[in-house]
Length: 248
Image (cartoon, rainbow, N blue to C red; front, side, top):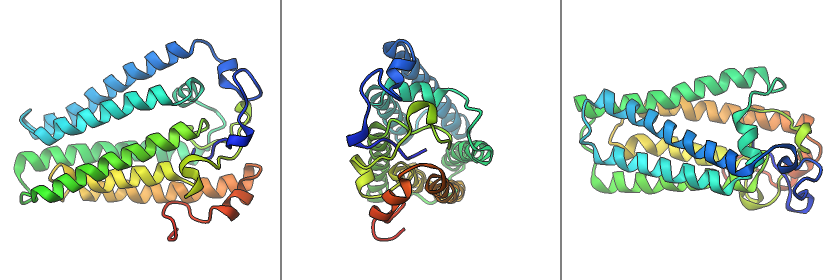
């Protein structure tokens, strides 16, 4: 969920919609989030190195380092209430989005597995060093954009729902001044260049599926927000583009 709260409307701790007032220990939430980051980094490592059949893959280690560092920074900069929001199941989440999220996660896993197999069996001719370095930079930029969007938006839920229980209202600051769904824009950048960073052209196939699903999710979420979130239609009139300024 990429709609959040505007700077002008932000409630104080314990105020209306203030998750810090709703939930318990913020430090405990952050510790749980950091532990989860380490666990998920280990999972990604398995998805990369087991298919590759080797640990001698420097760029894969770089990716794990990027993921772990950005994940921990992510946990430290977002509100504790958002950590709680993103780790709980919500009955009012859109049913279609629950299935879409599962397919997106599986697509991400398939990217890792495909790059590992490509590294092992050398399906792709070696990419030039500049291509891999440029891809690495763009992966980092994509990750940074996702972190910026999440830090600016304390309603960046893991599933699409109108968070009436948290005082949900419309974002207008941070990257949301430029596009309406900057988090998805960051993930698309990440998915496109991740296979090239890891030296795999074939992994662009599951990456393309993930990007297509993110575009579909962007459209469906934007339609939902315009129909159900007060003030969002007016915001969409001011910030015209969903993902890329001047394009869409």
